[in-house]
Image (cartoon, rainbow, N blue to C red; front, side, top):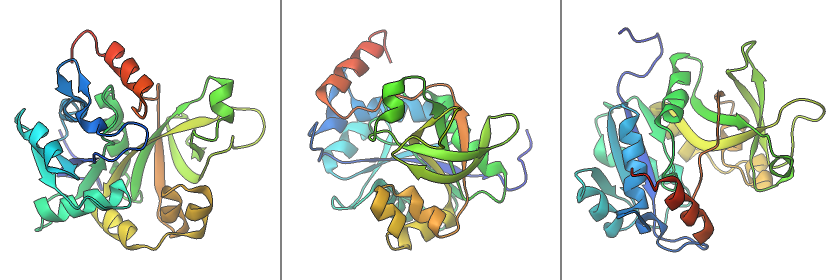
Length: 253
């Protein structure tokens, strides 16, 4: 198999995880059918078949849980303001020589994530003009469309509607008028240089106004492309979400 020009040759998947959570304290270690949630997320990332997978742990007990099943983890500072900062520290620790040329950031609370979604984000980096790849799914539920807890990308889609360039991100339904609105899924594939630049940029005005970190990259002139996927993976933020994840994974993981 040949590698497309511009495509990363040695990606690494990093999963940031920390114990602090207002609505579900200790959620990385929440039990789902005999395994901590972070282990389920690590398994989904391994199933994507994209090479090295490392959990960037804010506390030793998270690293211990991953190492107990034969996975790789690195301990990071507990006080990072974002997952992007956590994975950058982890990257510098595990790969100081710069062998990995792309970084996939998979949130640590997605135990039912489909591996194909991870691959879709990375595939966007086959275009050398793209700095960051991410994913989104069309919203079918009118309540979800109106919800300000759902982040929506405004995308200039290619003619086939499967990928496009992100123009903006917002919590409100956009663009205005008839047509689909999309639910942004917070999973990113960064070129290594793009991640390094991003974490060293100061918070931007639009980022602070919308409370959406990815706007920092757009305001700095970085290109984010979006791949269209079929479904939004369940993110576990509450005890009710945890019960849903247990039900979805009841057949085994």
